[in-house]
Image 1: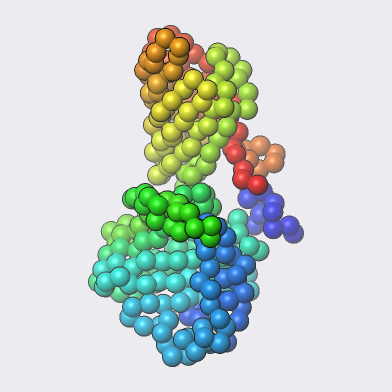
Image 2: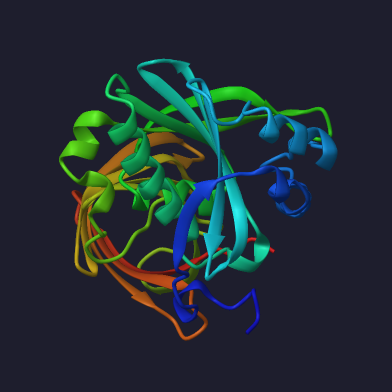
Length: 300
């Protein structure tokens, strides 16, 4: 089976975690190199050095842990958990390309939460970061119940020397005790996805329209802009396949700028190629209305 099939067509992997041992060093280094991208840089380990650190117990202490991710019975990646203090821990996860798009990241986050909150009574927060363009990791955090809490500007040094921003996510002990991390999403998950205008069925066309969503449970917000629209934002509830929302944006025209508000009803559905599309019916408070079709943008 191809590793590049649409996510909707690929089966979920069976995942479990175990502590890394010295004999794992060679494949961990290989996975680290394989998984390293401009969105998640590698740790540049050397096999013998890593094996020695594992043998000495440096990655099985009160301050830090290293986990092997076993997916469908095979090495699928690794996870690192480091305690900044007894009440807070930070995570880093690397997953082999062969297992991406199969729910591995979400399940790893869930199992890390179960282990560390159970094993560390003082732990109050389990946190991680995702590059601002690393949509799969953002969606994994969201699907595992982690709340998006912050945007760290220019915090990630990229291979070309430039800096990018990161989104910060966290799961608290209260979240874990309530089972938030084990709740499956109801309906569609738009978190982190970007949509572009495919067709204007009715009403004025907004060329170059770009809509980016954030979602937590049923609550969804999006920022958007386009040819004559600037600084647009919508917020609403996604129940099943229908998003009902209110919006506000600025319209730039030759004679100046004006603010528009209104409401809409957007139906979400999946196309045959695995991408999501949104059929959006909107009306503004001045009596204007329209219908447009938005399509999920895929990178690459």
